[in-house]
Image 1 (cartoon, rainbow over the protein chains, first blue to last red):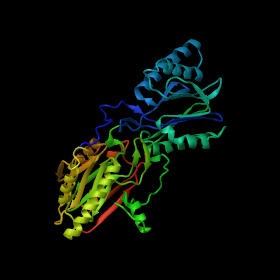
Image 2: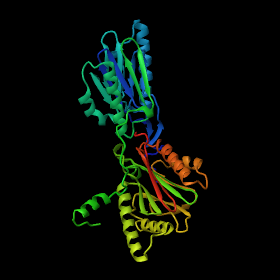
Image 3: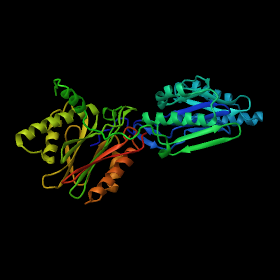
Image 4: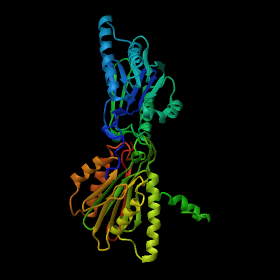
Length: 242
Length: 204
């Protein structure tokens, strides 16, 4: 009776079909990710952490291939640690973003990682860098990535404002993630959100039942797939075939 | 992606004490995009017979329409509703007629025979029929659904208990499936009425 053998666990690679969102606000950065890791249509982890720390105030939001992005984050964390040991200073977000970008660019035939490097440093405050697949680097005021991001470009474009307050920025990130999680089957589960404002790292974990919902009470489904269309045509006196 | 996981579905049917329950999720999607969350995959044939269809939604809809057509003609000729066991075999035959160009839909039939005994059967896409005394499932995440049903089913459940069990098996089953969920509907069929309830679930 098994009718769903395609894209099953034995064939598909684990992917963080994901939504990741980051933005700058007046005073720092807010960023977040959903929690779903899927293999084909099987949800392997429904509360995963897709935000990897690269240093105390620099984070990597991961989307794309789960193992590829984990390796990239491990490597860059190691390089940054070495670099800050040699310089005696906290690493800069730009350096971290460039390291991620170089890994993506120099291994573009093998790696599939679409990531955001987000952090706070004393040179330039809060920064958001987009590092998509193949190795571009783009400094942006806000950035989104992952499969779920397709559904929220409109929302993000229209709702983003420069110099938001911390609360406005956190709401923007949370709503964007919740909207994407509603529409994208490969995003969902939980929301993890971080705020960096120079004073420290504030982590918010939103469990599945507290994620904002956008689908209200629906009417009882009629369960009449072709019937609704045919029924209304018949009522209007038109000929119904079938 | 396989044709069977193009749309996504989760359907569970269980037998209780002189009652049956059948439920499905409400998601309609195209591969990874969710389009609506008010599309049940369980259809009523008559008061004591419900049909659940997973797989490609267009084939599920067409198969449902063709079966309604055949049942309507049967009712006109026989002047009674079709027994669930008869319906199951008719469906199996209808699917095998298309052996080399099948409907990409896998059905689950749940109903009460005229004497009140529960009837459950399921088929693959070309009509291999299997009846069961406990439960029948189909969908894009069969392992999750089997696991839940196998653990939670007990014989002789009353209608309310049966509803609870089907609800929990369906919800926990499709919470691990990216292609099914976004609400659920469950019908509990007893000898004098059918109680249909929708469940509010996580919408991701």
